[in-house]
Image 1 (cartoon, helix red, strand yellow):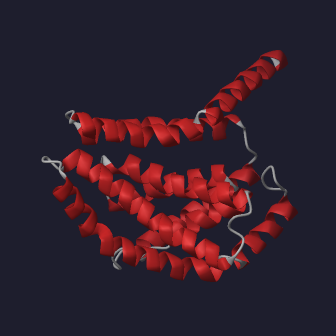
Image 2 (cartoon, rainbow, N blue to C red; image 1 turned 90 degrees about the vertical axis):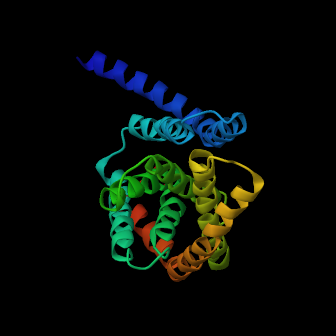
Length: 244
């Protein structure tokens, strides 16, 4: 029985390493598939690209699960996801302005790219129970996960150490989120795809994205330094994550 358990662990380790190796491919391949589908003007674009988004999420969840994290390593994801979901619900009456992006960025910055991605993806999945599930959900999960992933990568390279750099990153990430979702809208739902219709779609979302970007900076900047320090002490005390 012990030997079987060891073999299973070894196989899970191999699967996890494989899935981790194709994470960058998943990040790049999904937008490429969407653009190819748009270029060829193939049918059912919204449905097919949403299915591709679901496939793109798989490597991140599988590689995380394969590492067999301890309960204390999963707690940051649970807590930050709960905070982000609650923030999205509480600020629902305020158009575009939500603390979600700020909290996902802080998660990736403090705990790493894996935690950032999983927190971003789960936040959109869980909160859409209240806001409404649909073909947009996988894209929201992927894009918000991408934001957390990028925060973790840049943070690990010391590029998000100062308050201003974190604020600028948060500002830009809201526009990245809006750009990806607007592009999916154009590909999936604009029957006559041309430059004018694409410009109209992007222009319609500009001020919403601008309001969201400003709101994200307002939420993010005050906690950009204090929360990482606090989480750093918690990681050290409770030995959370591989970097602790």
